[in-house]
Amino acid sequence: MTPRIFCAVDTADPAQAMKLVRQLSGLPLHFKLGLEFFTAQGLAGVEKIRAVMSGKAELFLDLKFHDIPNTVAGAVRSALEANPQFLTVHAAGGSAMMRAAVEVVHTVSRPPKILAVTVLTHLDEKDLASVGQSVPVAGQVLRLARLAQESGVDGVVCSPREIEMLRKNLGRDFLLVVPGIRPAAAAADDQKRTLTPEQAIALGADYLVIGRPITESADPSAAARQILAV
Image 1 (cartoon, rainbow, N blue to C red):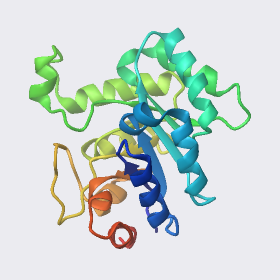
Image 2 (cartoon, rainbow, N blue to C red; image 1 turned 30 degrees about the vertical axis):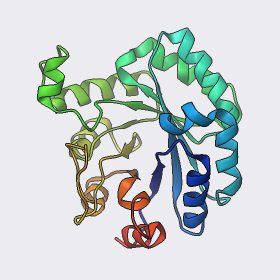
Image 3 (cartoon, rainbow, N blue to C red; image 1 turned 90 degrees about the vertical axis):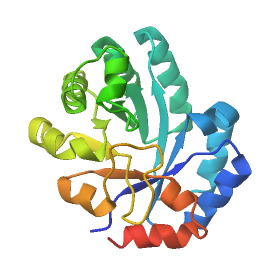
Image 4 (cartoon, helix red, strand yellow; image 1 turned 120 degrees about the vertical axis):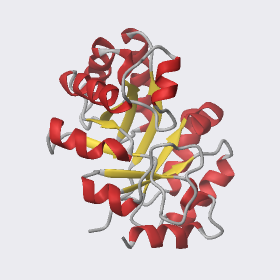
């Protein structure tokens, strides 16, 4: 089975981003644009990327909204202009905030999926303790994921290490979108909770998010093809 992969286009340079998307446009890949690109280029930049995406590619607008419910609702409403298939909020913003996001997306005929970010993949127990959350990472992820599910979101962004636990506790229909994916030969970079694509797929990930192993390769298309062949 071909894995469903979002290539993380993590650059503020529109020319670089468009070149990368064009290089990969013939492959069964989707694309994720995050804060780095969006802060520099805004909705106009997103439209330029959309123009060079293949017709079947989905857009993941990963802006991780985290504010009071009214502000997040307004931000989501603005983001809908980009016609993304996926949007993110922080589960730590609470149920009212997540419900506000869900309510807004369901005002359009083809609502994007709302994903809640649980614990960022660069954090471990020591990092959580430093901000006053003296619980194991897995426990915090499960707590936030349950809250997200109860709040009506479609799924969560989680590290590969929590896939099995979340599948067991939250069921098969709750989407798991998984960054921190590193092919066996790739460096972990600043990610602390990683697995290979093969491992993540076997555990039940719905989508993989892969950035630097593709985008920093000398041949991004070849790197992507190798990953897609798992």
